[in-house]
Structures are given as structure tokens and as C-alpha cells.
Length: 81
Image 1 (cartoon, rainbow, N blue to C red):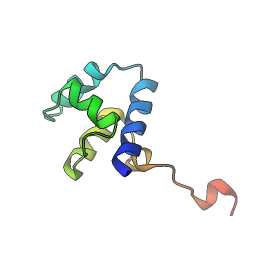
Image 2: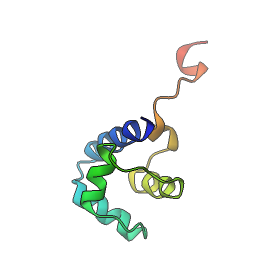
Image 3: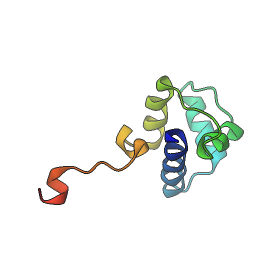
Image 4: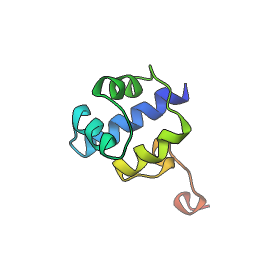
């Protein structure tokens, strides 16, 4: 369940910033993403799908890359290969 994994990463990144779900929803609303706190909860719990057009807005709000949401990326330069 990729959306559940993405949701957990969103929650982790949001918590690292010390943001509540309400504050995160407000930041997304400023970016013209019509979302509520309860929708953020559903996304973080894997109960709501994330659409492709929503990913850039989420990444901008969190200041992260797509890879940060989709899962760990193992780059050869990081593993010494």
C-alpha cells in the first residue's frame, strides 16, 4: 500500500517541523490545495489516496523532494558502490 507509506512519510516530515495537522492543512490551503485537517489525517493513515497533482503541493509545503515521500532512495554514492 504505497499511499499508506507516503502518508507515514508525510506525518514524519510534518512532525519533524513541529506542525499540527491543522497547521499543515492551513499551509496547504494557502497553496490553493483545498484540504481539511480530517483529510490530512486520512492521508497520513493511508485511508485516502493522494493524487499526482497533489504531490508537488505537499512537497512544497514540507520543503521536501518526491523521494522523501515515496520512500528511501539508495544511491550508489551513499552506499560506497
